[in-house]
Image (tube, rainbow, N blue to C red; front, side, top):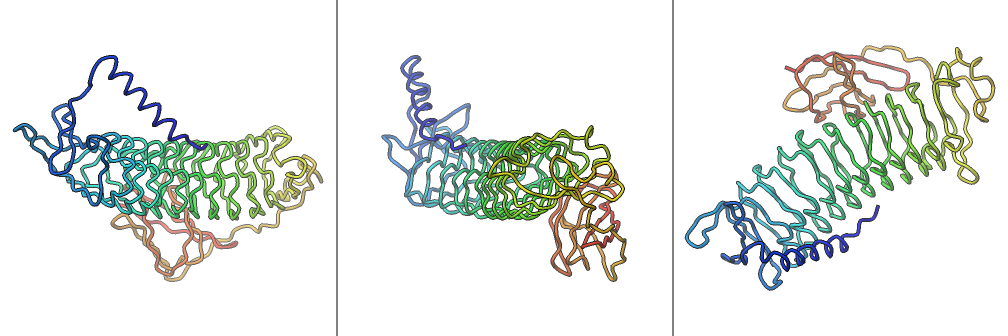
Amino acid sequence: MKTNYLFKRAFLAAFFVFNVLSIGSLFADAVVVNGVAFNVVNGAAEVAALPDGTKYTGTLTIPASVTIDGTAYNVLKIGNNSLRDAPALTGVVIPDGLKDVGNSAFAGCTGITNIVLPASVDTIEDWAFYACSNLATINIPDGITAITEHTFQQTGLTGITLPASVKTLRVCAFQDAHNLASINLENITGIVAWALYGTAITTANVSNVFAIGGEAFRKCPNLTTVVLRNVASTGGWTFEGCPKLTTVDLGELQTLDQGAFSGCSALTTLTIPNTVVFMDAWSLEKTGITKMYASWEDPANSVSIDANAFGADAGKINFTWMVPATLLDIYGSDFMGYPVQQTDIAELKNVQLENAGVYFASGNLNLKGFQGYKVSVVSIDGRTVAHFPVSEVNAQVPVSLTSGIYMINAIQGNNRAVAKFIVR
C-alpha cells in the first residue's frame, strides 16, 4: 500500500471549507502569544497554525499555559495540522502537562531531527509525524496504547523503544521508515497491515499477536530472522520480498497465508509445525527452500495445501520433504510431487551448563553462560513469552514479565539446557 497523503490533505481541506461555508466559522481566529498561535477548545488551549499561512521556523517553545483575554488556559494539545509542512522548523520544546499530539501536527516537518515528548502525553493521533524524513529519534511515553495510522510513515527514525503500554501498531504505522533498524515487539498484541513495511529491521520477534496484518513486514531488505510465538496466522504477503531472511521459526502457527514468504530467496530450510492446517497459494514461492521439515501424522487429513503454495512456472521451488523415520511409510517416497527423505535432524539431548545462571531484575533478564544458545522464556502455563539468541557470556535482555515462575529453554545445535527462575 502506498498511501496518498496529498489526496487525504485535499479531502480534509475541502471538508473544512464546506463546513465553514455551510454553518459559519467553527472557531474564532487563533490568538498569537509570543510567536505561538492558540485556539481555546473545551476550556483548554491548543497550539494552532499561524495566521495567513505563515510557517513556524527555528526552535518552537510551547508554554505549559497561556493567558488569552485575561484568562489563563493550560496548553493540552498540539492541534491538528498546526505545525505541518514547516521545513524551517528545526526543533520544538514540549511542556510537561501537554496531553495530545494532534492529527498531522508535525506532518512534513523535514527540518526536525529529534522530539522529546513529556510523560504527560497519552495520545499521538494519526499522521502526527508523517514524512518527517529527518526525524531520527523520539521517545514514546508510557501510557500511549497504540502507534496510530501513518504516524511515523516515511520518517527518518533509526530505532525506537516501545513501552509496555503500547499494544498495537496500526495501519502503515512505520511504513517506509527506511532507516528504522530496531523496534521491540514483545508487548505488542496487534500488528495491522503495512505496519513495518519497508523498514530496516533485522529481526521480527512476534510473541503475542494472534494474526499479523497483511504486508506488515513486506520488503524489509535487512530482515534476517523471524520468530513467531502464539501466532496463528501470518497474514497475506507479510514477509514477501525480504531477500536476506534466512531463519524462520513458525512456533505453533496454524495458517501460512497467501504469499507469506514469497521471494525470500535466502531462506533454504523451513520447519512446518504440525499445528499448520492450511498453506495458501504462493506462500513459499520463489524462496530458496531445498528442505521442508514436516511431521503431520496424517498429512492427507491434517493439512490443506494449495496447489500453488510452492509456486508455479519460474517461481516454483524444488525441495525435499524431511520427515521422521516413524512417518516414512505414511508419506511414501513422494508427497505432493516432491520427494520424501528421513529427517537429518538429530534428537535433542539435555546438557548441564557449568556456571550458568539466570535472574530477572529491573525489567531485564540477566543470563550467564548461555552464549551461542537460542533461548526461549516459557511461563508456568506453557506460553513462550520471549525468544532470542544469546551472543555474550553475560547478557542482559529487556523482557516484560509479570510475577511468577518461568523456565529457560536454551538450544544450541542438538544440545538443550533448561533452567528455572522466579519473578517476584
